[in-house]
Figure (cartoon, rainbow, N blue to C red):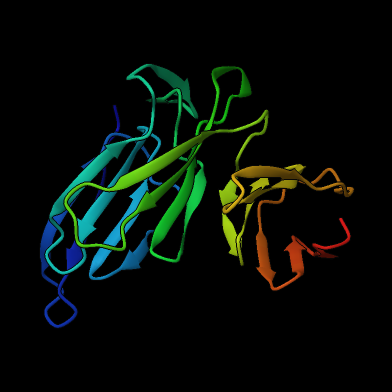
Length: 194
């Protein structure tokens, strides 16, 4: 399997301080909290790295098994991390899995405390294909799905929200939100109306 290295570099000297290897591509930028960087990879694992020295603090297997498949000419997990992580209220949310017939999962990891392994909640995704960075707006997670409308998830009620709007059949996983306003690519929606 192709390994991808991520590490910490000194801002002063440019010297590499440490490296962590993932057994697959890292497709989304890490998120940071409390001196740690968090990211997922196509190997089905979610990683926590010390941002100062680059050492691995822990890695969490989000894939329910170690099964592999060819994806983009690489050997990857059947459940790659393709729903980029979002940080909110001391929790990191991300998704694993891209093939609905294999199942997918939404994870919420509690990393607000300085612990060596995260507490987590896993929720099975309805038939959707996560593609892109998740977005949190209040108590709602927005899960982009490429050509499909975004799927919402109410964090408090633990319920999925189906939004009904048309997409232009263009793959667009660029999603953002501010309050009730939701932006999908070049389109703007009022979350209370869709």
